[in-house]
Length: 205
Length: 184
Image (cartoon, rainbow over all chains, first blue to last red):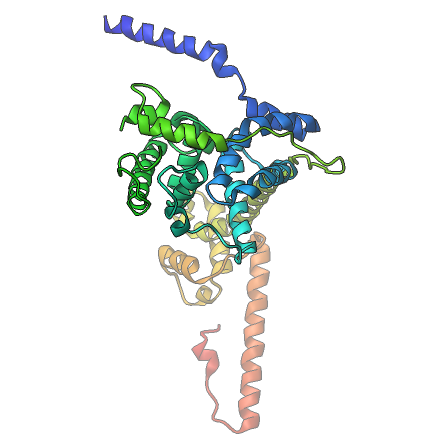
């Protein structure tokens, strides 16, 4: 009986090894290889796939007006430096890291720029706009604000965020949960100052 | 708050999360074509780094092989010369090899040739511990060995005579060095 089960398992394993899904090359790998071979036009596909990720990463860190231009810059930079990417399957984490570094450079270069302060946002009435909520998110720690931006602004699910950023699903789940908790607390506190009806509502409506 | 809905939009929708999605969704990325400048050049990935590593490893292996071979070729004759005194016991049954044992003993320890027999093991330990590795000397025949002995004795005599002359010139008392050296 045990032998039969073992044989069945072996057959099943063999079956999975033979399945064409495992042989298929990830699309990122194919595109990166093609671009490095000289087909630059195919980089547009990577741009379509990963522009929302870069947009979300930047939106969590830099002023919104700058985000669109920075997205373009980052992809052009990535195209120039594509030959330095060792593992084409890690294109997502790689470009997300470029975006984070670029956001840091942006803040280094523009230290005198006046950012929107918490108080100026809080003083507004209860009905919050998207920009106000985004400013609350930006006040959270890096890991939480990035994950929340990708989830709420770019509309990605937790598993998608994990795949694109290279984080583990467990980390993304924790980031979402704790980030949401912090955001609610922050909005609840500021909601009281801004005459919001209830902390639980977060003054969103 | 419904964690499943926050995680992957499954299960019962959470009102608060939905509200955030609706509100912040207005800031979502608006697709825009990527404008690649026509002058921009993309470098191709080069495979010379792995090749260089492979070449370096191959060179190292060749070098190590040559070194081992060279070291072995240097060491082998010395071991033969130093192990030769051990072969005195079987040499009793075979007279020709007895001569070779004596030759090698004189080659490795020339001082002991006049001071009588010594234990072979002691000489071998001393040779291994004190002396650096040297290339082996050519094996001499009995006749050549006798000639060599004569040359050595002559050199010692000359040395003793020079020593006597020096002492005489310096006015020092004479020493019967011939007796001390047990010559004759």
